[in-house]
Length: 130
Image 1 (cartoon, helix red, strand yellow):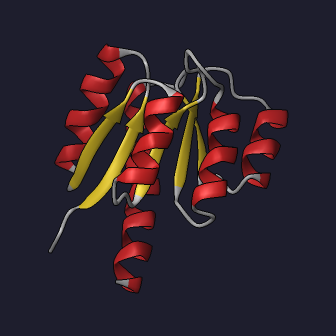
Image 2 (cartoon, helix red, strand yellow):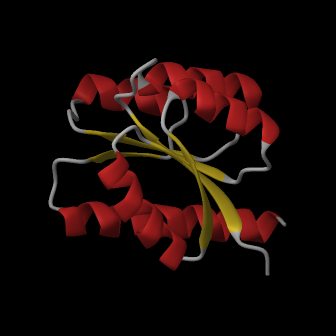
């Protein structure tokens, strides 16, 4: 079975390294992007299955990137990470079709468990339509 291709968008190299290794261990092929432009270019040019997107990027915020993703692919599963989780952001992310909004500020194990659970659900749904 072919691995699902996941785009990991974050500008913090330490976070990318840890998350990439972990997500690879869950059976995904991880592609990296450190800014919004690279992420959007990757979504257009690569055959991706899911996006894990940091809210704070150097060139655009995560909601703006999510809007661009929706212009390209209305059904692309997107998990949004943020250090500053609040109800307003949660509502906006849901309105734009984010599959999950996960706080980076929670304990690392909690973040990983939440992300893994979310990706497992997405993976199962994507595999059932293939």
